[in-house]
Length: 92
Image (cartoon, rainbow, N blue to C red; front, side, top):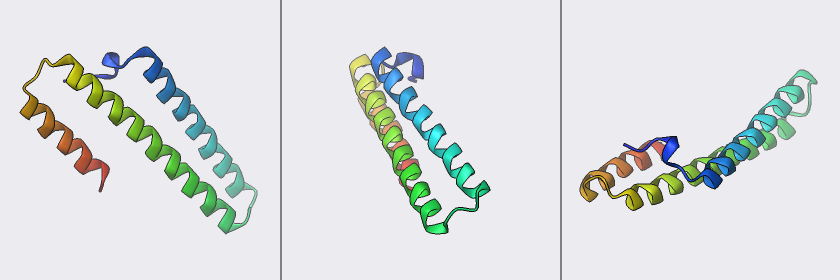
């Protein structure tokens, strides 16, 4: 099974940068709540946060898929079955 240690260093940095941005967005939304800001503005920011999280998830998924097929250590059918499970959880 692949782990984050199998990720290319540049890809891992890219995902980490996205996550730091997401963290900043979440803190900004918390401030908006504390300040009693407009509900629509908060919802807009939550929507942006969800989109950023989704983009980070897709980037990580792409990286793991590419690494999985490059490594070639496992049976291709097992790899596809595993990936289908990941995609199924992603689309819930």
